[in-house]
Length: 608
Image 1 (cartoon, helix red, strand yellow):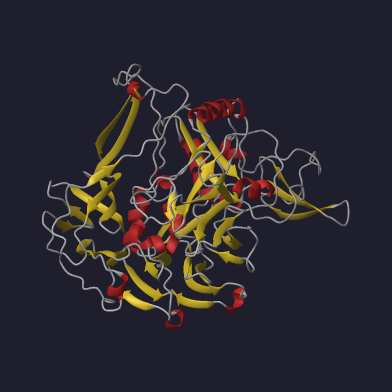
Image 2: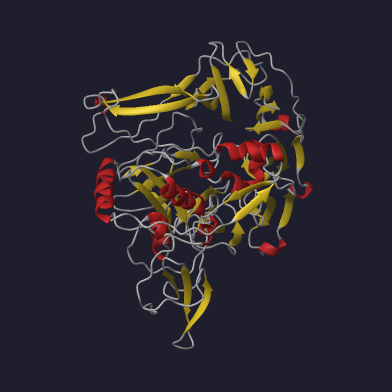
């Protein structure tokens, strides 16, 4: 049976004398669920689950007299946050520390079990888990809807009893400011972190102090704590500009002090205190300074300079190492005698450790670093020697080199064009942002839109409008053959009504939304499209079809709660209209599937 085709409702959008017709604009108002693949899903799920190590532990991190770590248990969706006393607490912390286990080891303490917390929620995520400097308190950020709007709870680490009232309507970006205060951030109406706050424990949230309010809607705030926990950094960043404040935790009343100035096009990445500065695409300084806490009082304004580090040239936010290879430094972390850099070379990520000179001595080289390899065990009889991974490069029409990672089983694949290929493409950051770029980027009320204008261009300007129109996928679908395609999306709901309170009715002419009144047995029409009256044959308890079933080709019956929310970053209507238009104009009979996960946030469903 051929899949049904989504209806067309003409919607005109005009700008700079250019009129665009979007027949599927109406899809942005509706939710979706797809069914009919349960058996295949279960089979794939069983195989994937058989490949992972369900009983596992994260690398323990030492904080004072404790090791902190996370446990995953067989058959459980979520993690346990645990700690264990250090066997020899008198010894100084070292990178060579190994947590003792076994019957003679100090007992394990489960501080927070996400499996228990998640029992009453269809979605559950801990976005941050922060230990106070004295190890007595835990602050964690909880999201139970998938909308990335968190609630912060503080508990006693020993007894797990609550401390003070929760902080509501916040981000997951939290840091301790001493042992009696928390720093956190809140968002504006487009979910942009715009305010940094200082909260004293046991105080009411309404009395919290606003440390900084970023009013420029192209900038967002980020919080960071120094390794010594004596300083708190507040960074404000756009795509091309970043500047940093700091606050001395011992003197919070003094407020924020400028660490690096705000200069358009200048990016400052601080790392307690290692600073990478770039101006309009060119790195201006790479400053690694091993200041002791005592040095802070006399070196509050680091000097930015072109470095004289041997074997290193700085260009375009990257380091050209002595070998001639271009390496992009994305983040750094400083330790007493080494620096850990998160790097990319030819697009591939890696973690490299470089040794540092003694405190006070100049850094003369940044070479001969040691790359750390991370290997996850794969169960189920997996033999890595049967597989090959290769790095290929494809040349785009404008000459740009596009990286491609190819993985295949060498005893089965011939690489002569006769084997099937699963092609996975993700073009959102440093690439094509969305499939309906122009419509989305013209709407500043959608989260992330304003902050992306610097990277992708502002389509309210004619130059960028026509440039975006030339490449974005929805408007460039052509009457041609396409391969088999699976398109995925997420849709989380924030309705407070019961699942059975609202129903959708779908016909070829339009969709209808009805609500069952709590006070009477009659139905009240809430909203409708295309038709004024309910088609005959539909009753309150009749099966209801998903409004986007027309786009998906799913004819199974479905009841839906009243929810019109997308995930908090990308609207589900974008891939929905992409599928609808593609199905309408493509000339092949290849499979086109659309999966929209209900109850999911931007990162899909919670749990494993």
